[in-house]
Length: 111
Image (cartoon, rainbow, N blue to C red; front, side, top):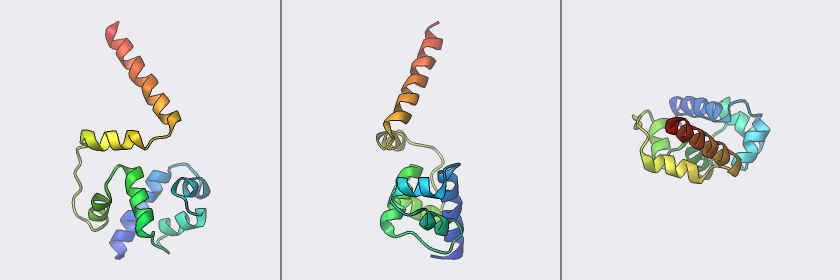
């Protein structure tokens, strides 16, 4: 992987990890926390299976992620299919929060 691609990947992984620890985010991906840390500091690269999982968590297809890593433009508009794909992969707690937010939104519109 070229240095630019490693930098883009490190940035994306850091964004996706957010405030989670390396270990907590590693559990989500099914890898060790030190592995996630290696991706962020660019000392290692994920295997294709892990790239596919990162893509899924970011709301991309693997092909879109590879395009992004290689510096190709990625569609900025989020198509409905991508949103549906992200929703299908969400944990139940997050879905419940979204459901409540949607319900609250519709209640405020109805008032």
